[in-house]
Image (tube, rainbow, N blue to C red):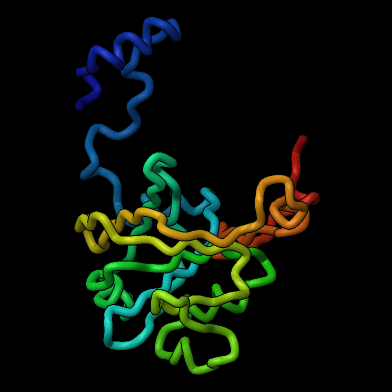
Length: 203
């Protein structure tokens, strides 16, 4: 869509807001956005931090991701993306199931473990175990979701993975441990780790 064109939905939006939809278009085409511009746009967009683990039969793998989000509750589905450059990606692509760990600030060491390349992320056997179903997991995570991979899509230099939740472990609603003041969710923002809590509330 160029600056001289609008969609019917765009025309309706413009009419309802009393201005022309052309004013909403800042780039004439996606080709005008460079990788640096794209990264700069997302740099100030904070994201929750998760650790993805899997084992497709050739040993456990883990990686830290900031792309995890829920897309449906019936059925319970989540999505995340994994880079082609990650050494863990081939295993996650082959795996039928994965474990998605949603991390709090207290698990920063686990987040850094999954984000560090060239190391054995499972060398310390005291911090991880296997579920009865066989998947590797880190019990210290604030919450985790075991799920079945139901779809995969190549997207640029990454793979988008859709997962249906089969099992969860998390503080129940109403439990103080579920509140940000107690859990202090871990957030990644502008290449820096942050924690949420009472201090971050704005109302």
